[in-house]
Image 1 (tube, rainbow, N blue to C red):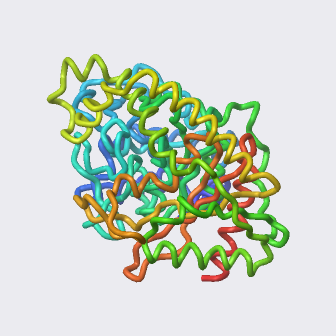
Image 2 (tube, rainbow, N blue to C red; image 1 turned 60 degrees about the vertical axis):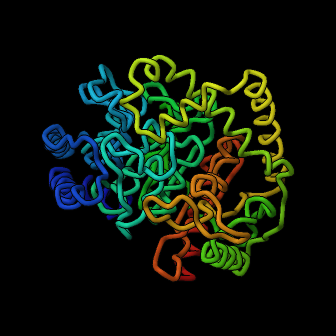
Image 3 (cartoon, rainbow, N blue to C red; image 1 turned 180 degrees about the horizontal axis):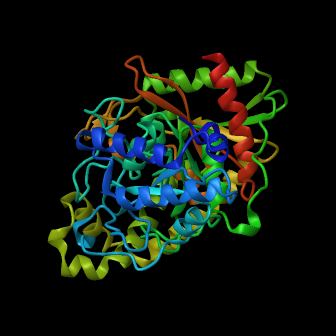
Length: 447
C-alpha cells in the first residue's frame, strides 16, 4: 500500500485513518517480535489521533495527502511526551518536552505517529546490530542486517508497519537501509530539512529525510517537512528519459562491488541508455580520500557531543559504539580542520561531475544486506570490512551536501534487494525527484 494511492481514498472518506492505523499496529504486533523494528509503539495515541483525523476529514477539514496516514519516526527524533532513546541505554529515561521541527511539520500535515523505530546506537553504525534495545533483522531474510543506521525505519515501511517514515543520514543511513530492504530512501540536500530536535551524530554531515515505498511517497513526506514557504503545490511530473543526461562516477565508486550489485546496476544503466538517456563517464578525482575525510569529521563531532556521558556512563553504551567513541577522543584538531577543507574539495568535485547532467548514477550500496555478525564481505578485488563497504557509495554526498536518492533496481540471484543511487544538483531536490520518478518507471517497465 502506498501513500500516493491511498491518500485520495482517505480524502474521500472511502478509507478511514483508524482502519489504516489499526492495520499498521497489527503488523507491528505480528512482526516486531521477530524483526525488532520499533523501540516504542504509541498505539493508544495513534488511534486517538486517527479518530480525530477521520472526524476532521468528514467535516471538510482535509489537510493534504499525509492527513490520516500512519507514519513512524527514527528514535533520534523528538516527539513531545515520548522517549527519545537514540537506540541507547544512555538515554533510556529521556522523554522529549517538545516536538522536533520535522515532527511538528508532520503533525501539522495530519500524519499519525505509530511509534519510534530502532537504530544503530546514536546512529553510529551501518547495520542496526549495535542497539541498546536489541538488533534489528532484515524483512527479506531475517538472518541478515536491514542496514543502518535507520534500519528499523526501513523495516517498518517494507513490511507495512507504517506507510512512511523519517530517518537520518550522516554517511548513508537513509539510503543504505533503503537499498538493503528494497524501498526508497531520499537524502535531501544538506540543511534543507531542519535537524532541530534530532539527536546529532555529526552536525557537519547529518541530514534528515524520508524512507518510503516509492519515489512519489518519498516526495509527499519530503514536501511536508520542508519549511512552509518552500513547499510545492504539486508533485513533480515524471518526464521521459529521452534526452536526460546521466554521469557514471567511474573508479573508486565502482571498484569494490559485489558481483550481483555490479551486474544489476550496470544492467539498469543500460536500461536508461536504451530508454533514450545519454550516459557518460565522469570522475571525482579525490574519491579515494573520502573515507578519511569522513572519518575525521564524524569522529570529531561525535566525541564533542558524547564527551560528558562517555565519562559518566561508559557502561551504558554498546561495546562497539563505545569503542568508536573512545577512538574519537584522539582526533587531532589539525586533522579535523584538514577534513573540513577536504569536504569542500569533494563538494566542488561533485559539482564539476554534475555539470551539464541531470544526475549521477551509481550503486546505493556496494553489497547486498550482509549476514548479521559478518565482519567482511566478498567483493571484486577481495574481502573488505562490512562497515567500509556499506558507506563506500553513499559517503560522497554527505560530504558534498548534494541530494541523493536510493531506489530498488533488482535483486541478487538469492533474492536480496539491490539499490540504485541518483545524486543531483544542490538546491534542486525536486528536479532529482522528477528524475527518480522517470528512472523508477523505466526500471518497472524493464522488469
